[in-house]
Amino acid sequence: MDLRRAAALTVFILIPFLLVAGGKKEEAPDTTPAAPREGTPIITDSSLAARVNGEGIEMEQYTMLLQSNIDGYVAQGQELTEDQKLMLGRQLLDGLVTRAVLMQEAARRSIEIAPAEYEAALQQFKAQFPNDSQYQIALESQGFSVEQFEQELTVQLTIEKLVTQEVLSSVTVSSEEARTFYDENPEMFTQAEQVSARHIIISTQELTTDAEKADAKARAEAVRQQLLAGADFAELAKEVSEGPSAPDGGELGTFGRGQMVPAFEEAAFALSVDEISAVIETQFGFHVLQVTEKIPARTVSYEEMQERIIGYLSEQQQGEAVQEYIGTLKAGAAVELYVDF
Image (cartoon, rainbow, N blue to C red; front, side, top):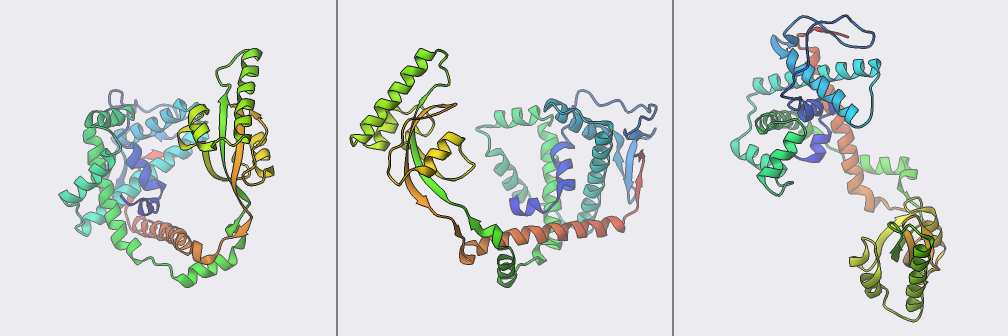
């Protein structure tokens, strides 16, 4: 699926896609009516959570979706308050209603996914994994069965096709609109000073004694002396550096202020191009740094930014158009909710 288009489909569509099949299959949440508690959705004694144009949304589907979301927050160490559970429950049920309305509209317009389209999307997703076994393990770790996930993939492809056909295809951003946005938002196109740099690090991550750290610093000092004597920085980095950049000759790329630890950043922006730094100590170890380029602050030209601005405005307008489209469909639908918020 095209990521730019997917971004326009809004969270209310994507939540069911990510989680509706992901409830714990072996333990469906108890849907027995209980005494209402402040801030908690009141589950009525019904097999349906909602009905959309006569089509039911199963209570089990909704409660599994809600519980799997709550469990997800707990797994991340976040305990939801009752008010937060209430809000989450309302959002999830609205997402299921949105999903149903869109699928009904797709059926009305006879939108279907061809086998080749489905297979291409499935293979694109599966390509993230080294083999089918890892694909299945990844799904199961999120509570999906392969069948559930692949069925839901068809739903999402259908929704994407509907929205693309009925909404996204008509959204265009002109170069004039992009230029106006650029002119009216100059602060967004100011690029702060940057440097390109490389380093050699003698790590202290696994050292525990002062003697070990003193030895590491001495090694870094020796590296610095070799560089000052004319040693090739990249080759020496490949030989002795103990960081992930070593295979690349110590290259760190280009960075601005606020991206590196303070001591490292201070040294980098103080150095002249090609100058070898003193030994710098950070929580990661002892570094010897060389700046290879200094890029002064500047305003990025419109020509450089035009395509990105058009992409940004397109996503923004597509999102608004999709929300409006969904709102229109839902306003014309007969929706009955059986969960009391």
